Amino acid sequence: MIRKLLLAASAWMAIGWAGASAAPAPLSADSPLAAVPAQAPIVVHIRGVDRVKGRVKATMTAAAPDFGALAAGQVDAMFGQLFEGRKTDAIPANGSAFLAFLEVPGPGGDVPMAVILRVNSYAAFKTSFLLPDEARELKSVADGIDRAEIKGTETFLVDKKDYVILTQKKEYAETLAKQYTGLDGKIAKPLAVRYLEQDLGIYVNLASVNKTYGDQIRQGREFVMTMMDQAGGQLEKGQLEAAKKMYGALFQLVLDGEGMVFGLDFRPEGIALHMQAQVGAETESGQVLKSQKPSGLEQIGKLPGGQLMYTGVDVSPESMRALTSGLQGLQAGEGDAKKLVDAALTQLADAKGKAMYSSMNYPPSGVTFQEYADPGKAVAASIALYKGFGDGAGYMGGVFKSKPEIKTDAEEFRGVKFNHVKLQFDLDKMAELVPGAGDGMKAAYKKVLGDNMNVWFGTDGNRMLTITAKDWAEARGKMEKFLDGKGLIADSQAFQATRKQLPAQASMLYMIDAGPFANWMADYMVTMFKAMPGLPFNLPESIKPVETTSSFIGFSIAMQPERGAIDLYIPVTAVQEIRKVAMQLFMGN
Image (cartoon, rainbow, N blue to C red; front, side, top):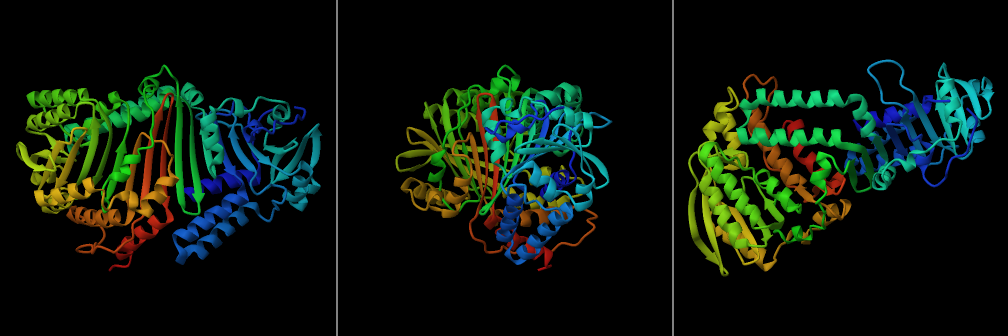
């Protein structure tokens, strides 16, 4: 996908497309976005063709040194074929290049577009970029506008001093040759900054898109919701409702949006993806975001090391209440049981929880802590929550075989009284949700959840502490290390390296140790696929764990008034660790 995006953007630059209509005028040098017409609803940006090419090659070589030289050669060949011998000396290595749609693409017909290139000078661009035959046929058709045949297609070149604009329509060239308002004054500053600093960026004016396609987007949302209802047999009701809320919120974000940017950045240490959206303050999404304030989530570093996943969440109390059941994978069941669970969740929200931090292995094992204004009320609400679980209830994607076994004040450690809950999963019922899978799917679920799960929770007066483990001895050991501050994830250089690549402020932060995750996922997926009847390819009987070195994939969500952002960072070392695990599948070992 990345290669195709780069290929498409570079191809536009090579052949020259664009749009609009007469008399040259200089552009503001304050921002590259000043060169892009403000009405452009979709704009692709490359932060220097030569620069990006070099960064792609460096990242690929670092991620897979054994294939790096081959990959670098392919990148060079691809760019060489695109430019077909054209010299790019007049295009600065770090100069911005834009592909701008001047109107929202309709269901048919021509779409006016423009390629806008930063150049050292217009004269130098003409003499170096154009091939000899093209340069000989170059003719001036108006003040600041030239006509050429580029790859057999009539193309107009517009002189904007520091920039050159290429288009296939004379009327577009005449419009763009005039002075016009730039996109720099239209995009909200936070979006513009992130958009321009990425190697590859895409800007979408959502207000314009919604004006043209709003009805189709709403129809698409209804279609997705209907399809999810029809496919609901594969999910428990609680899971289905949670999924519908999530996808519904994404559609709503688009409908409420004013602008959105997507970014892809190739760094020496890894690949970073960024998405950010601006929404109207009075929209449904804007109302959700108005009380949000991201934080540093520093206390995630106080979780014990050696775990598969780490999570930090700091959102408004209203959002924390809405997220609680989803974060814990709770499924409330029906009828009176659901009423009890809903009441317990309300009580838990009344305890006024703050940021929550959690670590987890699979089968479930880990430590969670969260500060509360009234931690005692939070513990009581948690007990009530488990008591409310009845038929059809579930936890972490599993379905209960029976009501949870609950023992209050079951254990005490360093002055903290811990309540104990034992959850028995109904693996047979879960396997039935996949027709024909039988015992194989049951085995796959057992790898994820185990037969049962033991949870201990209590309060030290400020926080609610939760430990998940196979028995109390293991739980006590985890809590001892946590309270003593020994072997914390903050001590991991790999963890800190990835954390530094993500935004300093976030509402939700997820860190996954790539190697152990790949080992676990490969084992689970092989078991699951082997359970499916009629599989058209062979799989090994089992996956042997591969020794890996810690390297964390990081994911963050930042929410604040009128704006939300998502970031994903994949270090090259994580790619290397995942390859170690994947090779045993590809090599038949």
